Length: 293
Image 1 (cartoon, rainbow, N blue to C red):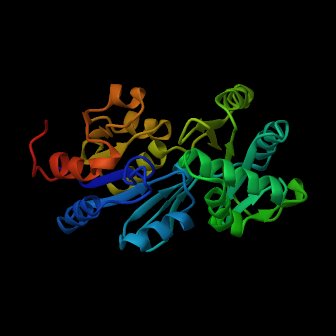
Image 2: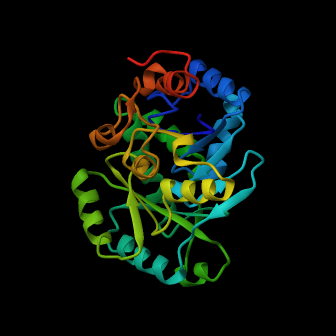
């Protein structure tokens, strides 16, 4: 019997139009009504996840920043995994050595960058073009100006002073202009021991402390609460979901739009994110309401 369902957000619960379908919302509510816990697992900061939940009237647990933090449905942080000051300096040194890369720092109290406001704005424009490649320049500008990270970004003048400020660094995230830039950065970061590298899409890299992953934080949580591996269902589509699928293989569900590595190890494959694949997975594999196939 499934006791906990954990779903990725981008490319999984969210469609490519960046919306959660009515079918997905209804399936989540139905599972919760039957006593099954539901959690979102995302690379996003918790504050950003909360905005999404409020928009769609969802109340659930949240695994944020690729496993750096885990929150209950009331917003209490139950688990956390952060960078040491020394390891944060190593990662920042690599990022600073590639000034063409747009980089941000996600802390337990907000979003930061060591780069200028202008460079941050250009990075936001680049991110918008990645998500919406056919959109015009004006809409790209509006996307950047209205982006919550850009509006709330805090700018670091002295990184060493920042490390002594009390902020806990949960994740570094970077965005490149090409796959070649990202591959170069990954090669440099591979030389830094004790970190976890993942990505949400091809033109970004996300760097966490070595023990922080979606799979690891879920394992710690269920061990405390007496939930077995085969009582957890995980749903995802990307590289940052791989650790969940490795830790919880029995009821793992890859989206139809998932990367090949995820589909190869998944127990099941659901329809893609534009066809309410999460709802199909919940109804079929957690609630037994539909026949697979």
